[in-house]
Length: 342
Image (cartoon, rainbow, N blue to C red; front, side, top):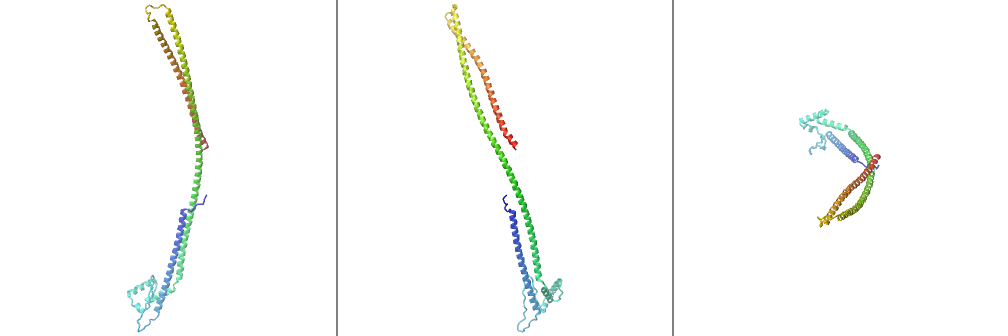
């Protein structure tokens, strides 16, 4: 079986894995950049606090000619750094602001009484702070989250692979089923084709037999017609001979009667019309005799023709019934063989 190509689900899963890997890499780079920015900001804050601490611990320089100026510490954009103020400047703050700041730092755990002491406490805490540890903790958290995401991706990939294997098994089963179905259909097609060929051959043979039977029937009909014609000719010839014999006998009888009448003494009442009366009587008797003989012959001939027609019809019906029986038995034979083979 040829190797299966990658399915659409597998391609989509690979694309999703690539997208997730790219997203993880982008998030990692972004978090590293944020961590570096936070470290830089923490360093800047520490430098600002150190500068403020140095400025607060350094005594102010009094010059009568130049006005007194205080160094300004840079303010970070995110975390506000407290500006170092001298006791004189701290006293200039409103009382409400000082109370609010003291309460805030007291809530945070500092116990300083003045704002400068609070700033000094903050600077000491910042000096003792371990930014490397904080960075390591952030990196460890990032690594743990990345490992969790990688494990999730591995689990998802394993699930996708299992689904892919199941899909491959299903595809193999479907292909094997289709192959078996195709083979079954091909065998059925071959069997049907052989049956059709047998039926066509039987049909051609039956058609040829029918044509030969029709030819035989036409030949028999022609022979029958010729025999009928010859019989009619013989009957007509016999009829003519009978007619001629009857006419001759009638003529002889009439001649004998005329001869006897002539030999007999003539009747004095009809001496003139005797010959005419004899001829008319002879003709009438001859005609009556001919008509009677013709009627008898026609009746006999009609009976013979009816008998012969009945015989011909019986022979024709027998031939047709035998032919139909043979064709039906031959047409049923291939179906029986096909059922037995199946």
